[in-house]
Length: 125
Image (cartoon, rainbow, N blue to C red; front, side, top):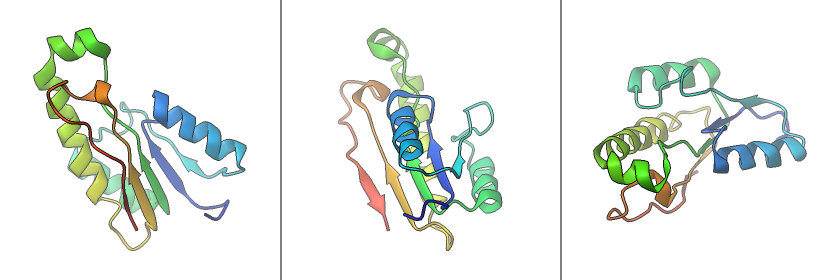
């Protein structure tokens, strides 16, 4: 990747996303596009499409998910699965645009009910 590439890290304040940001920063990538969930609701297809159209990231790391730990996950399984199922297609189809060179999606067991298998990492190139 070019060090000046526009890189969007969704979920940059979480465990995986913050590690990605630290690594990219340490490697000299300075053009990071970071949005909190309050700034960009990844469940909102229109908002996500507008963000990608305006920012035109070259690379996307999707590490965003609704997480809350075992108790929250067991207490609100429908909310967790709904939010995470909405984030995935909305955020993983937007990068399929001429400007985006690559997209990676990351999943974690804590973001889904225990009866649902975890997603594996996949890339769009």
